[in-house]
Length: 500
Image 1 (tube, helix red, strand yellow):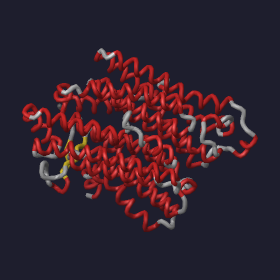
Image 2 (tube, one colour; image 1 turned 90 degrees about the vertical axis):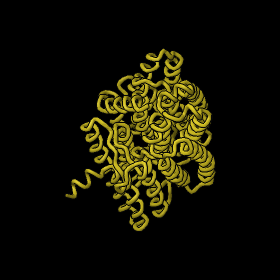
Image 3 (cartoon, rainbow, N blue to C red; image 1 turned 90 degrees about the horizontal axis):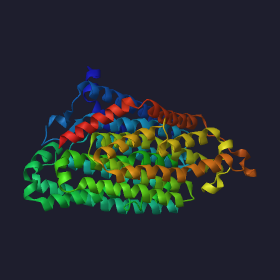
Image 4 (cartoon, rainbow, N blue to C red; image 1 turned 180 degrees about the vertical axis):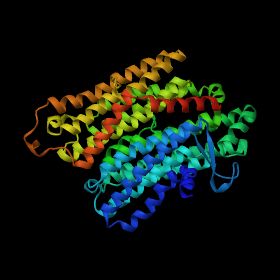
């Protein structure tokens, strides 16, 4: 009986479980090992839950809807369980587990005492729960609520370091994210005025009937969503909060913010554009061309800014700005290949960037060196850490047999299918530029002469090693055996393109 209840309510459990544990943690803050153990156990359970949901979605082969409290839409809150939601929850669970593992007996060195460390875990779990909720929700106002929860918890994670620079970065993030949230709420309000609904299915059906009578209102709503979520996802030139926020946050926070948080906001934009407006309205207003243009500019501009950075974590932060460009470009191609490539690249980048931020955090905390030019000899003194950094870098560049290549390859196929050769050239140029800012780090680390002070440099403890090896293994596995995730991404792409 209990097993049946859990399986039939699994989407809800996946969403609320992190919130429940986050509520419990402050009561046991003095027992830090118990706090870490609960967080790690929850991360393992989320992976199991995400796997079961993926199996369920593949078996059903169609979207199913869950009505909260038995209240059906449009009166109640509705969850949508389909390939897209299963895909994103699998990404969230797959990244959060190694990040949680990395934090064991390690986080207090960056954050402080047990109370501050527990507060970090609380915010971390609230963010994970909000991202899981974003994956499932089919209600526009709940999208707004969940992105606010995700934003506030992200700001708290950025400020976890007890340093003035962290407070400044967090405050900047909060102000700009509030502006983005205001625009998103304005877009939701305009759509509600036009359709009288907040449920995405009902909004889409009504919007298809009435949008031609109020095209200016629809265009204004789309503009609000694009700019609002553009700030949240840090697409160039709306990225100015990201480099400071991601580079000053503790390493696990940087990994989860760059790997997952901005992807959650992108998923919201994806669901609004495809499930609410539909491809007919997107084509009518030229949103597809705008997304491709914005993505192409972000790829080039973000990469150029990354090349100019000597501080390692800021270089990786600007890299995130560039890599988000690939996702926007894929959304704008409006075909199965491009969208499948964008979704797969989302998963690949989440894993890769988490590994890069965690390894850079290890390097900085061990050596005390923040700048790329000072990392000579790290590759020989910290072989495992630098090996994972190298694997992640090759994946991000898009070298064959690494996960990043699969996503970029399908994006290229999508660009060729639409005849958009500018996007094809941009993807190739982005890979070259990515090599220009990552390969020098590898060259200096392996071939530079280690300083005298490097005698104490060594790889981190067992939990951190296990975490880094797991992430590297995922990068290689998805590069060699991409079919399971690629199939799920392809199914999500087909459903999104047919929904409008």
